[in-house]
Structures are given as C-alpha cells and as structure tokens.
Amino acid sequence: MTGAGGPRAVLIGTMGAGKTTVGRLVAERLGVGFADSDQLVEEQRGKSVQDIFVEDGEDAFRALERATVARALEQHDGVLSLGGGAVLDPGTRALLAGRPVVFLRVGLADAVKRVGLGTGRPLLLGNVRARVKQLLDERTPVYEGLARVTVETDGREPSEIAAEIVTALEEQP
Ligand code: S3P
Image (cartoon, rainbow, N blue to C red):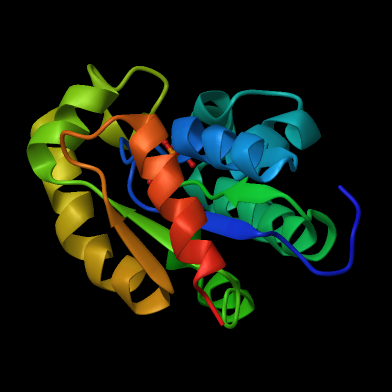
C-alpha cells in the first residue's frame, strides 16, 4: 500500500454485486494490487467481520471501517473494494469525492443467487431475499450518487465486467 495518487478504482455496490471477484480481475488487468476493506478491517481487528458484528456491534464495525477506508484511500494505489455499507458513513462518502468510483449494479435475483444463504454476512441473517431487497432499495440511490462509472452485472461473467470497467476507466478524463 504505497503511492500518492490513491486507488486506480474504488468499487462500490451491495453484497452480491461481485466487488471482490471483479476487483481482483480489474487489478490483474491493470497490473496493480488489490485490497478489500472487509479484509483490511479483519486483519486490523484480528477477527472476522461476522465476529466483530456479533461481539462488538455494528457501530464498532462502522467506526473501524471508516478509519480503514480513509487510510486505504490515502495509501493504496491499486484497486480497492468497499464493503457494501461503507458508503453509509457521511465521512466516507465525502472522501470518495473526485475518486474513480465504480458502482457494480446488481438486481435482486442475481444478488440473492450470489450471496446464497448469506453465511458470514451478519446483515443477511433471517430472510435473505427480504434483507437484500431492503438493502438494494435503501442504498442504490447512494451508490448511484457516488459513481463515476456504473456497470451492470446481472447475468454477466466477472471477466466481462472487469474488461468493461478497465475500458471505462481509460475513457475517463
Ligand atoms: C455489509 C457488507 C459486507 C460487510 C458487512 C456489512 C453491508 O461486505 O462489510 O457484512 O453493510 O452491506 P460485502 O459487501 O463485501 O459483502
């Protein structure tokens, strides 16, 4: 995590959008490193996101996430994927201004298919489909408002999505 320019791309979108899978492929194509905010939080805290939610609570997770994203935006010069809820924090949203933010859009059916039973995703406990729908409804306008590039992911292969992102980034002024 070095470099002054910040990430080449910051991937946002809800759970099941494919941020981690696609983010790795975009990083590969660009020949840069990949970082994922959930993984950075887990490394720093020494436990899983799931355990942080259960043992410390969502507020504690969000505080860690905010600090982690702020640091990564300063220090990481590759591709950065954000946890689906990171953009709920106004401070994080402000930090994303002027960044190459890419929104991976996913519809309800594909999101539900991709998250499966939601294992390891504390916000999906209970009725997965209803929870995913609620999160999509609440958050899609936020993702849209932050994105410089929006990519549709429904029914598409990660490699195809990654290729579209790289092209779109190259076309950015
Ligand atoms: C969350 C999304 C998760 C993880 C946490 C909360 C959310 O990340 O940060 O479980 O609020 O949408 P992914 O979007 O990578 O699954």
